[in-house]
Length: 257
Image (tube, rainbow, N blue to C red):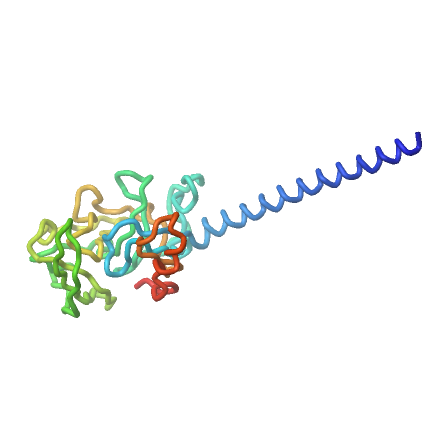
């Protein structure tokens, strides 16, 4: 009889320890998830680049961190827009030249990444492929050429260094200066909005298009800061032996300007 009681106590103690271990594991997972969610919402969030609209600054297969604190917070700073913030808090306005992630005005479930070209009050126009801000031609100088694929055809694209009125320098890519978005009407940026353009000027759906238009400041998620990973899509998920050769090691840690 004593032996049975002893076995019962040992069994009960083992069960108690097992339940305690499960509870501790669940608690650890919960707090780890809470810390990750807080970091993602308030500090930085990872994004990847699925299209070539920001070439040559960003390439397909780049992975980057976007700082959430740079411009303050809106409901879009949080997963599923769960925090009902009507206006941006701790607000700081983006500058011309910043590369930012934002929610598409026509479909806020979609994230876009573009460069800020126009701020409230600016008049933006493209004439023969050359950007004009407030009636003045923006300086650009050719710095090179590169082969690109357009459909199944190989074409030669020109790289320019563009210098915005505030002195910000960045590189853009142009195929020609007579395509659909190379001559536009003049856009006047309304209060509380931004005018966005991709660096791949002939292959970017941006504020020149009615599909995007002016971007409300409330839609801004954050500023692109640096790359933490990049691959060239030459290996599939199952071709693990090719993974090391598909990584663009020279892009890891590169700042975004």
